[in-house]
Length: 215
Image 1 (cartoon, one colour):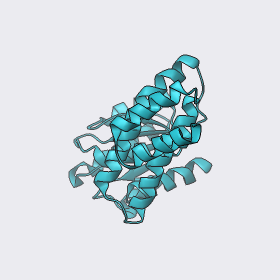
Image 2: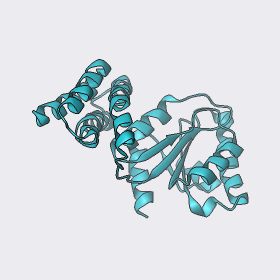
Image 3: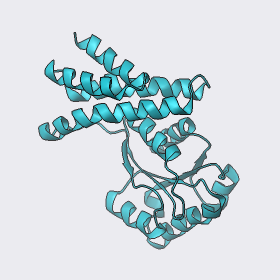
Image 4: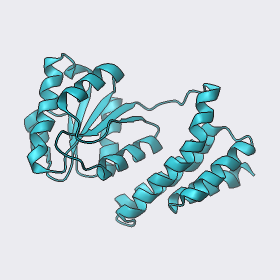
């Protein structure tokens, strides 16, 4: 029974079916399956499956987005129970992601966040059009291992540099690894502004975060 519910959770997510994801998340709780198991061995496996297919060119972006939405739908049922029971998820690390000031694009950043969560990372998504000062304040407050800066507009690239410079001024640059991504970004740009890494797509961003957290 347990394995069939976990498999159903995985399938619901891999098929991008949010309603089924919620339905089987509730069934998991009714069947006394620990919510952490339902997330790790059900929902997260579904997202990872689609993420792997996407990286191999066998799944479309829309399928990855739908899988992410389905995972979040199931998580909305399971997370409150985890918080009530005070069960601690073993985190692979803490990652903060956001789109820099002047840019309101979110989809790439959000996919990165979903894939990181599927791999066990604690993700703090601070949104879009985030001022450099706000990034610095949030790094100071939340102490992430990695900060991911997204920019989809060439005109907003200087904002990525500004965040890194202000982290230096605040004495925080040595406390957090900074990675950048987005259509106009390159490894050369990352090197120029002193970032710790660059990722050209969501899957490579997850690999990069893993490398940096391992040190």
